[in-house]
Amino acid sequence: MARYTMTKEITLTEVVLARMGRKDGKSFAEDLPSEKLLGNVSFGKAQERMREKYGEGTIVFEVHPQTIVYEMAVEDFIKVATIREVKE
Image (tube, rainbow, N blue to C red; front, side):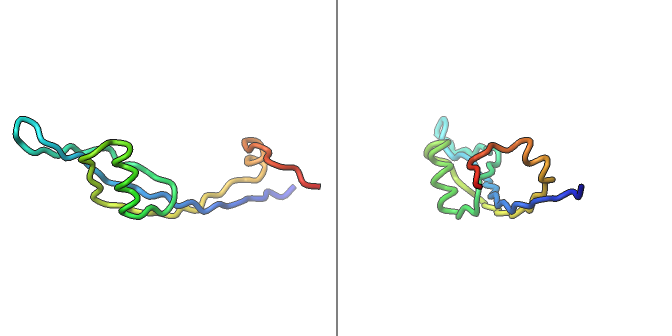
């Protein structure tokens, strides 16, 4: 039997960020771990989402969208996928 494959293109956006604040009268910046968001997320939208997650004072420095093409054998996909609908 021939081995069939399927591909799927997925875009993720890496967000580089930090938290700014003041402590003991001095300003500070604390690096936060980079986040990966699904889709091609704009700078403004990334800022909004990161403020929701980390609170005020969160600053987004960079967004890096990257599109990756994934490939998988159809047989493997069938083993792990959830059936959504059966068409006849």
